[in-house]
Amino acid sequence: SQTIHQWPATLVQPVGSPLSLECTVEGTSNPNLYWYRQAAGRGLQLLFYSVGIGQISSEVPQNLSASRPQDRQFILSSKKLLLSDSGFYLCAWSVPGAGVPTDTQYFGPGTRLTVL
Amino acid sequence: GNSVTQMEGPVTLSEEAFLTINCTYTATGYPSLFWYVQYPGEGLQLLLKATKADDKGSNKGFEATYRKETTSFHLEKGSVQVSDSAVYFCALIRSGGYQKVTFGTGTKLQVIP
Image (cartoon, rainbow over all chains, first blue to last red; front, side):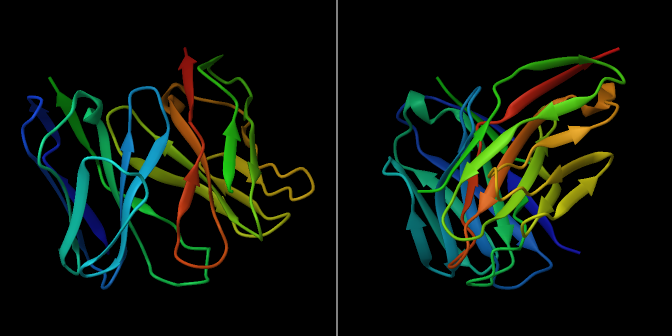
């Protein structure tokens, strides 16, 4: 069966510090991968998605970046955190299938980031 | 563009009450529709889905019917429990291309004993 892991589970960082959040998927190959952010009391905002190694698309301009160094690894980074980067970060994966909008996205447990 | 509109919460119900959470959507083509649930401190879990008009998704006593004529996918449960307290997200996946999901803002449900 497939599983998705995220770490760390919680993180408190000062403004201006760097960030690295990691997401890994097990039990599937060549998944589509996604990073979402959920700010307090708000819905989910898609930040990045990837359909393959080294292929990253950004949905929202910001000081965050994403990388996919391996097929089942997705990393969210920042060189300098802002207060507004605080939130709950969710990684998700889905089975690739261009033109087939029926498949589900499966979410990881999330990372709660607090920037002070 | 695509969008999902959910009723605003929080919704507070007594145990065994009937639940309806409204969801309407705007989308081109024929999207698939989903309800996700997020329990406190956790990630999102798929609750149910429907992939074409008039389909009914169901799971754990929850149901939702894909109504193309009213562009709606309302979530219902006949008798809620305290353990159903969570945030519920309506979502759609647009047809064509990769699977980009559009989420609603979420509706918080609190069930009191």
